Image (cartoon, rainbow, N blue to C red; front, side, top):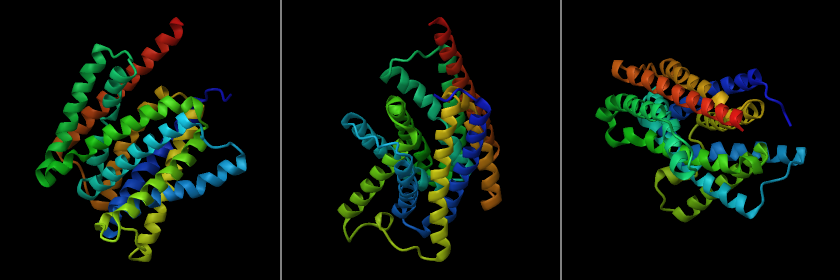
Length: 303
């Protein structure tokens, strides 16, 4: 068993927080230059091709139990839905706004944990959740005026990712993390190919599988797959060196990184209202995850 080494965990989470928004920025660069199906396949095919050989070489075995495999399939469906809607929102919204809105997921996860897993939720956490959702609405308002209901897509993404994380939490102790990602990548690729086959020849543009229109787009698709896989591998490694409750606050580094990349790539900066909302969301989110960590520590001490 690997002992807790938080500094190593922090290092890998920090790398994740650099890679994840960079991958999102490249999705925004591609825009409608490639079908949504190609963007998602680039993500999951790279994950499969890179991690399956690693599992075979390390002889870790795959997650093949019927119960676990069923949950992996369900998890993959939510992962595909979340990534598909996230990629769509990145075509329409400023990079920092889209990522900041998705970060309401700790609040959603808190309520799902309360009603599905019967976890304890304190009054201060509920207040922080209300403030966090309020901050989220401030971020949404400017984008809503421009793109309408599409501005709400990142909230749906947050619900999908929260469910994805709850399922992950329920099977994490039964699966090797790299084997889990290899299996998930394979299942997700198979689901996407099945959707493509069912769509048929008359499928809309975003469900088509096509060759990249240019060499540049081909390299961008490759980079999106590589960054997505590397980022999640960094998070997996980080969780082997430190508990998720310790690492969670650092994930909010993604938002300022996304803000910088939005300015660097697209000359986008949040307006005053959105910037205020981002700050409220960050503060409320960090408070929620820190409160959860304190509750877990108190519970462990009492036992």
